[in-house]
Length: 411
Image (cartoon, rainbow, N blue to C red; front, top):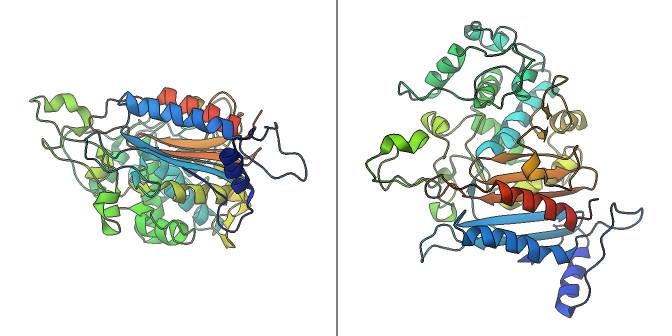
């Protein structure tokens, strides 16, 4: 367990440590921080957070996880469990690297698009076919970049798995062959195809692979030192939480998306998402690996209006577009990347954070949720898909989101 102030901050959180050590009453919560008072965390909530996560681990819903809660200078960060269920599995630490799955969409892809929009290199209302004329079929002619970002394009949720295909070019061809099910701008459907195409637009505009562009324009400037695609190029596999394990049960077809895994084959440092794995590990929809501390730096940047430690990543207008409602009227409320009030937002938001807070989840068991009203946020990284992709931790998301808000004094 660590309770501490982030670098270059005050020592408020150290007071929390002293309160715990002395056995004194924990600081009282306030609905919002009054003028002149520093934000704080209610240390009485920490054991409840620990219990919720430990109980999920005890029920084998996930082997381990890392949780980070931050409110101003006050930070609570803790690692739980082990990397796997084996008796000799290494314990999770706050430096454990996790497959962030769809957090990729908001850590890499959406901000890359917004950076290019700031530079005038693309327009948010540009049509998809401006960049990919080959996509001019199947009702896709009017799809805009804005609609791709808000999941209002009308495209299907994902690329077909059969017949077997490999490579980015094949993925692009398949994406361009899809037919919309609803007129663009009239229907919300969360779709990986949207962000696969957005990642390819970034590559088309910049002439740079998406992983390199995100590294040079987001991760490196933010000093997210353990974040990026294809992590085995940078870090030891032993520091990475494993995800899927191939099984020798004679029923490969019943393993669904992961029927391609050989018996005993372990995904560790190789992206869990099967579509992105077929694409070589880099896509706009998934593929980024990260640590809890790095995601926290990203959240701080957003709360500071796009800048951190004197380095600007996004302009204030881009942060607003990313994190406030930009969806067409009547559809699930999302920013140009972040979820705000879609059906997927209710669990990680919990019962206390208000609508207007924002964030995203990842299929592997990851959450980033930010409340700009209070300045609080939490990060949760896990490998709940280990070993067989059958675990469900949605109730845990709700519990964590609620407790995180209560600990931050959100009312």
